[in-house]
Amino acid sequence: MSDAPKTSGMTRLRNYFLTGFVVCAPLAITAYIAWSFIGWVDSWVKPYIPARYSPDTYLPFPVPGFGLIVALILITLIGFLTANIVGRAIVGFGERLLGRMPLVRGIYGSLKQIFETVLSNKGDMFRQVGLVEYPRKGVWSLVFVASKKETEINEKLDQEGDPLIAVFMPCTPNPTTGFLMYVLKSDIVLLDMTIEDGAKLIVSAGLVAPEVKTKLVTMNGEPINGTVANPPLGPHPARKSRTASSRPNK
Image (cartoon, rainbow, N blue to C red):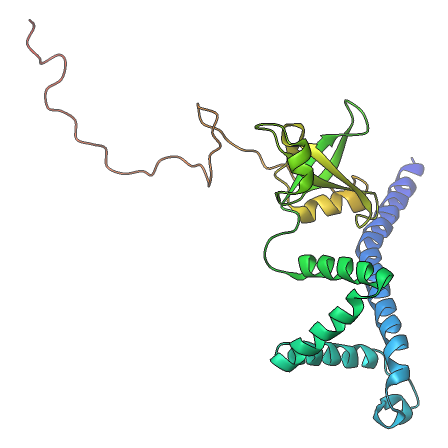
């Protein structure tokens, strides 16, 4: 009889600890990543700031984030200067100079194209989440489906009515690394989850899965969009005055 309250109390303490861990762990990890990023930027920028402009010279303690603020201001200023004619001419000259360097031009060109694609608002990034059978039949892997673009690969390998689509299969738990594959459209099972939900599923190794949104379909198999509810209540249509019983027999 005396063991039941003790077990119940330990169970409650364990639940309290797990609840607090779930709340504190994401906050602590986020704060650690943000603090590490600020320190990394400060370590790069602060050595180039003149001592008379640095608050660390006048204060008995270092000011975290000052280098990050200076970096943001400089990046914004460079973007402003690049937007005018003189800035574009300078950038064009620098790119032509880099284009003459055999090794550097390939690295710079690839990185520039990646950043332009990622930071642009043209919707050219991954557009949908899907599944493909990989690495063997019966085993499914999550992929991000890229936008459709006609490339030399499509010209060489496309089948009539079933084009090849570029998909990126991320690795767990780091979705920034993975494999680029060209898969037939008919071999891709498209999902309704968003790219963000797919990334959460990859990072959590399947522990954080999005909720299933049940779709209603019509008799023809077409999905119903919007909310489905009973028809609004209202006055019934007027009935005909003559009923079947009052009609004359033929």
